[in-house]
Length: 460
Image: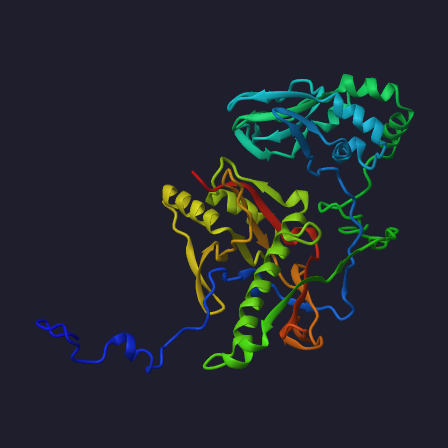
């Protein structure tokens, strides 16, 4: 302090005192660390040989996949190869013919409330939804109006009209929002078929073979007799397996950490500089691991959802009814994952409807739950610029035919399960290098183990 009259210092100042004091400090902090719930809730399976094969009962693809488009300004065009997602063209690979069919698609715009197709009227075209939402309306069991489902960008309806001259619309399709739709008429389709022997042959096989006998999951049927009496001849059967089962190879995330030996030698107290550098690097690798398990184009969960397990919100924001429909698509859903913005949008809808989600305990933490299923935040699920995201529902575990994580433990220089830190040496600039890497993947054992509520609006 100083004397007010003379300005002379009467005691030691704080700046000088700090030179003799021990400062209390934290470890280096990092904003990019999240809860990483996906890595915590997935059961991890050891993959000793680096590859995990999923053997399944044979299932027939039923042609209900999604269609992809490209645009130039306001003009939209379907990618020709994507037309093979339509049931009559399933497996058809003549690129020239598909290119001609894509060119015959006509673009149309519909405002909210417009009727795209009316139940009972002749069906003469297939509609491909580019973007927007379409609701399918029909009659319930007792003649009352019923909502049969919602379609969104990438969906299509009316493919049977291309080959059946007597087809009629089984439900009314009405635009919920502004929609862009591409339509291919039966007349245009027939004109292309007249000039293509390959397409005519494909349509003849499609009409003659008919659909193979399948169960409600699309799997090859197993013939079983039941409810009989006496001594009838029992059916013979066998279980058909997929001839080419999917194999998941372990993926890899790596980086090289560099630390100057002078820093490691001179500034190792009270905290080890190398250890702190490694700790933060490992945190970043784990964050990237979770991102890849959500978004990777090969094994990411969002890329491996069966088309029949995709649900579209009824209006825009996620509502309790939307999550109920998502849960109803599978048995034993263990967890729901959503971006925090999507969770906030869901909570707003609950508040608007006077519904209060419950709470449950998971790994010693109280979390939000819907129908006793934990609803967990995951900021790796993307949110578009327009505020559109997705909500993931999973059944987990190998024994329950669910979603599992894949890794390999016991690797050299292992620091955490599946993660290794290898010292590479010191170069001629006195810089130490450490190779840090983690091996991982994710597998969906059966299609209904994983579902997604997409077109989730988070901004309103």
